Figure (cartoon, rainbow, N blue to C red):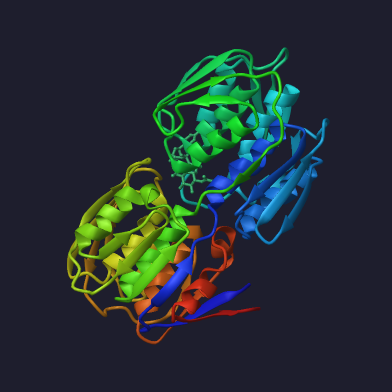
Length: 419
Ligand code: UD1
């Protein structure tokens, strides 16, 4: 298993370019199941979750060619409708094959998913919504077995919580269902808008994505299309923290500042100088930051996927900072590892209080527990004195394209140790 070694204390400077969004590329890849023919996706990040998605697509009978950041997917008229445990267990987003397969073939059998261990992460809302559309669903031997004799039918769906994956699954299913589907309390993340744009390029009629009500008029069939994946807002935020925590000056190119409004606001409240262009953010860190309180919420609120990274920065801010995690129930696993580096953090249920002070971290071996936690530990390692070794880096490789290379290009003393 690879490790990452960081020698802290370097100030990051320069320019860096953000990759395409993993969380957008995954639903886009699975949405191609809706339309036979050859689809072309650009700006697709080369990372483990995308490789896993391609393997899953191959196991269903699709052909994938992935060169540089261009992915072409050939989708047959007939496909396998069984998504095996071996393919699905690596990644929770695999459940997103359920909606498209069921909509196109009136049946699907999909293993219950795995993914990051950041909470129970059930899929009840996906299944309840598909049942409302007329699907008969049972869970048998670890598999979701779904049938829709006569096809899925459009209906009104009111999600109890704006689930990202649930909204995506239903948008895809509804694009080939009979009649109109209305999703209320829909997730509003930029990745939802990106998926809607691609579905519409395929000939779907999806209106309102980005708002809390989405309307989809079902079509008889869809056609393949071409599309570039939006920039990764979580990678953008991670690089912004890297600049701020090292008191550096970094211009982050190829990003969309409008996707990070609440995160940007939090950094500015801390006293970090940000300059925005249409597709860049320049971060100027000067130290002397102020402590703040943030609450993670569905978009446009503060993203849970940047909570662990912000916590690393908070360890450097004198006084008390506070994080309230409202999206996942078990997302403070990075805390004990940050504490091994010397951070002082108290956790009480959904709240973490960080007692920060500048220069308090000392390098040590630590263990990545999930994807964003890995990023948090690397960020902490950038300011910890001495050497930090982050073990179990496969979590990082699931969701970041060459993060250590990007940090190194900005002056970080960081290297991958292959084992
Ligand atoms: C997506 C993102 C993930 C991000 C999360 C929240 C992808 C591939 N992953 O995950 O990086 O952290 O959004 O922004 O896009 N829930 C239920 N029942 C359900 C579905 C969800 O109880 O049927 C709960 C979850 O356990 C969680 C909350 O709802 O507590 C949010 O989950 P959801 O928005 O569905 O996240 P994902 O789509 O899994």
